[in-house]
Structures are given as structure tokens and as C-alpha cells.
Image (tube, rainbow, N blue to C red; front, side, top):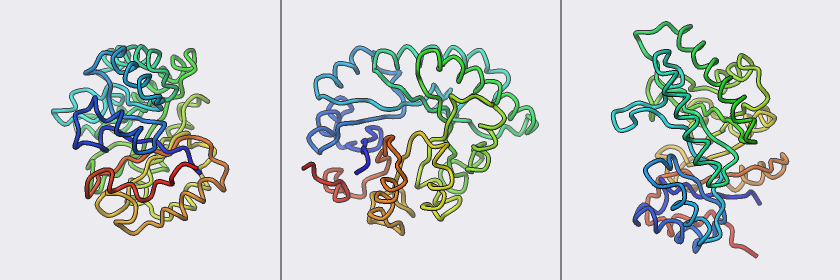
Length: 259
């Protein structure tokens, strides 16, 4: 059985954020993640984790002005200082929280820049981050996000671009965060994609499609996909990052009960 994690940004939103840790534990999760930790003190978050015997497995590097629509700054030449400062902040949080994987959002296409300017900036920033994070035993991830529905104009929206980025950066400390929902929207054929890219994948997230809701609400066969993930020998985390169509507890019919 995969090591399932709950994304507390999207699950248990019926509750205040600080109560979602206990809700996740009571529902059967031992692992959690969420998009960003930065509005809370790291020590406070660590206390939530310890209190409920949870392990946090992931969060994202600072994305810029998220509330204003920014979706990452790693590809913007004039924001490189800010990117590096954000990397230092993320390392500080990761160290306190015991997190060993950080995801970098590539950001949106900027029409005022050439594609070469953005791509080369992204490569430079990821090379810097991968090297810096390696010193702290933290893995850097890059996530392709669909540009058809959820993030129009997202720079790295396909597995092909993510794979090319890893090749261009050329650092062993960079890998792919594979989101089943986003890759179903962009590519389809999820089982084959997982198999053919397994050597590059260090984290998996999921939601059904269409709708980005819980398993069983769309076209994907998650019972098969979860068994396939096990059969491939993947040992990383598999995180529920969906929008429950009902109360979160009622959406967890896919989660196996602990023996």
C-alpha cells in the first residue's frame, strides 16, 4: 500500500487550519503536506506535527505574490535575489519541520520576456537551489502543472518540459513531483507515464478528473493506479491533493483502513 499523505491546504477545509492536523490523524493519515508554511511560526507547526504524531513530507518554495496571481518566481530574471532569499527561508522551515522535499513552482509565462530568458533563468535558479538544498539533504522537486484548466500560461506544464529541465540543470538533486490529475489533463495514459518516468519521480499527488475531486468521481481507476504504483516499486509518498465534493471524511472511501 502506498504511503498516503493528506494535503491540508485542500483537505479538511471545513476546519480551521490548526485543527486539520488532528482531523488527518483521526482519519488514518500518518503523513501530511500543505502548500506553504510561511504565515505560521515554524515552531508552532512543528508542535502540531509532534502533538499528533504526524510527519510532514512536502511544501513549496515561496511563490511570490500568490494572492495577486503569481505562481512562482524562479523563471523571472529580476526576481533572482528574492528567489534565493525565499530558498533560505524555506530551508529554515524545512529544517525545523523535518521536511526532506521542497517543490519549486516554475511560474507563468511572462510575455515581456523571451522564452530563452525565462528558461535560462529557471535553469540557473534550479541549479543553485539543487546544490544548496543538497547540503541540507533536501530534495528539490519541479512540478508540471496543467495549463489547460488550472493554471493557463504555466511555464512547465508537461512531463517533457520537466524532463528537459532536469537535463538542462544537470544536478542529481532535482526530480519530478508527479501530479496524477495535472498529467491526466495534459497527457492521459497515467500508468504508462508513471512507469516510463519512475526514475525521475520523487513525489506523487492525485485527484480525479474532471473536477479535481476525490477518487471515484471521475474517469480514473485509482484502485488500479495505486496497485500499479506499488508494483513499480515506488517507495515515496502519495498525497491526496483534491477538492472534496463532500465533507472530507466522507470523501475518504478510497483510503484503505489500517490493519
